[in-house]
Length: 523
Image 1 (cartoon, rainbow, N blue to C red):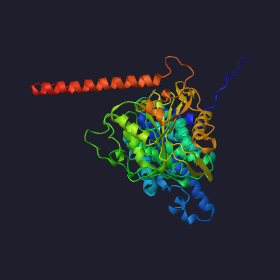
Image 2: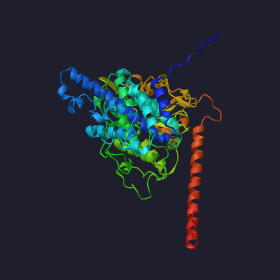
Image 3: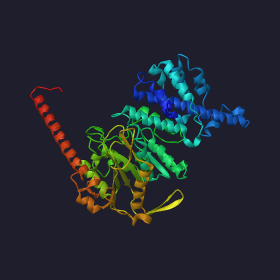
Image 4: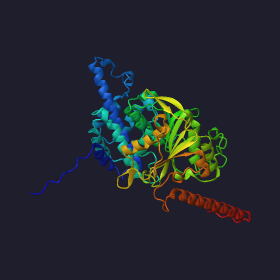
């Protein structure tokens, strides 16, 4: 008798993803995330509304069921009739279904000021989707009981799953709205954002904030002890972030609108206790020659070069730190070395004792690039001090002019066939090493580990001409040719960049000469 083949039951997320994928061909991959996530938001908001309405009726307060205040007091969005999921289900076969969804979202936003600018505006009508495909998606979402298990954060799980899947689907050059979860969890574990102001100058879909709150709650803290500030350049991603935070009941100030952090800073006077960020890597031509040359964010430093925004992001972050503030952010490895104004800025950051730790991450952690990137930790106060965290006093030893380098390139596990992620054990190992190095209790027991970590002094950095490439400091057991591969590649990259810039200048001079002779060449 033939053995019956066992089939793995599909998760709710997988089933929903398959249903959403049916929109392919009708809508661009970069677009249909908004179609799906807008509907999931409506289902969640409606379930919460109906639950609260039932509570009011059970308490004998039926006359208050249409008063907005009785919902907002419980952190629930008030939904008029046309915004309720039951109304959409009743009208799911109507030709004007897309218009009804747009009306539902607009009405929710109008009745709940905290959602201002968060929801898609006239979005579904503009897409001209087939009613049958839209109705099928609504039927699938209708099967999700968003309130079934409050501990499991069902809607948050779905959002997280979809954001990662959309980033995978969009691939290189897109998907910038999403930072892989294991990296965000590592940053939160290292910074320990228990209490104070948290800021992300390039917040994408809000993942840094979500993981910060999860970290606090997993350590029995309260999200009431933090306030969140962020900024996002792309309008659709700004809306994603606001929805992502709204479904979790996380209050945040993301500014009045989507805007460029450099040209329209929406938090000019902010001093944050924690900064967590994944700004765009190697952003080209972020300003013109004479723009932002006197910006107060660069005060005391050279103006960041217009050809690459890496150091503009660093100085923006430095300018936002409170006197005890700490920042964890990601940058392409090119920022670790190199000459010109970047060298001058990096040297001053080191001499001002702001750099605390530099960690090189494995390759293939991002959906948008396969390069290895670096996690920087900046600390505004590396002196001995005592800080209260989660009701406990934590002592920090004096680590002035000390720098921790970590090599994480051989850490992590594969997923989705070609990507790498950190496990919970990896995150604990890395964060514990960092905290042992920091704290009075363990600092004296910290020891450098070959291939993994090294604690350097300022004189070590000076000898290496202010390079922050970890492989220049960490001892490697294998003394083969590739030990300082990163360093060699950085030198090669810098030489190649200089050659390209020289060629660009020569071409400009040549074109100018022809123009003077009356022979203009148009490229």
